Image (cartoon, rainbow, N blue to C red):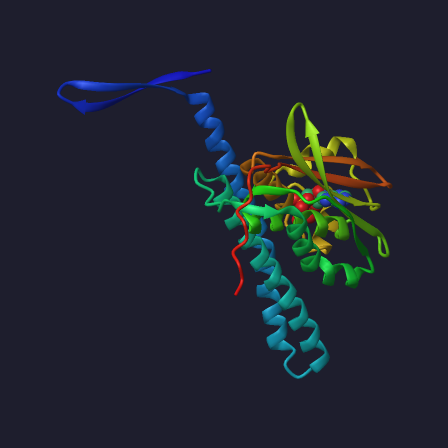
Length: 268
Ligand code: ADP
């Protein structure tokens, strides 16, 4: 550890001396620089494609088939760019000191239903079956939309990294461990799986195991890092079990809320 003294005048001849771990500061700075470099690189790809496609579209004015082809691609690249920007905004908010989470009582089964309904169209397109296998009624204290985003990310990955006509199973299970109560949301697929050496790295920002496959699925490499931030800001965790060629199970564990529930207001 390298400690440097930072001296701040406080007035009346008093100073505040702060010891700062400079190696830590430098590390944070390096991570920040890497992040910015990665973002710039990732943004350049769809922006470059949009620029080329819009020129091609202008040149193909008299060819309706080419216009259809280029405008379709243009829409996909624009959607990808929008998704990337949204995810970068989500991630930087989650990494800030105040991630602006709302805290309310959330029924985990309802959030799973929301994630399944958001993912249904993609599943149908790929012929993948979505099955909600088991749902214990458990509440957590947290932000409903962040939790729905985290579970949607896991479900959509399971769809994207499965072969066509595969099955994705989602369950919600109450778990007691060392005197504490949790809820496990498990998302299992029988898809391509992840090699052991990659399993830690997939939670890093912009990390993708197979660039081609991820690109084809419209991936950004930010999804799991967002899931991990959401899990941690809710006092929970995210784990993966996987075997290449057999499939993967992601487990989002959250602290269960067992306190009193406000009685529902009488509806007139
Ligand atoms: P992406 O936007 O590329 O999907 P993620 O952060 O969500 O980014 O995931 C990182 C990488 O982890 C993916 O590119 C993929 O290689 C791998 N991955 C994630 N989920 C699965 C899964 N269910 N099965 C196999 N590989 C997966």
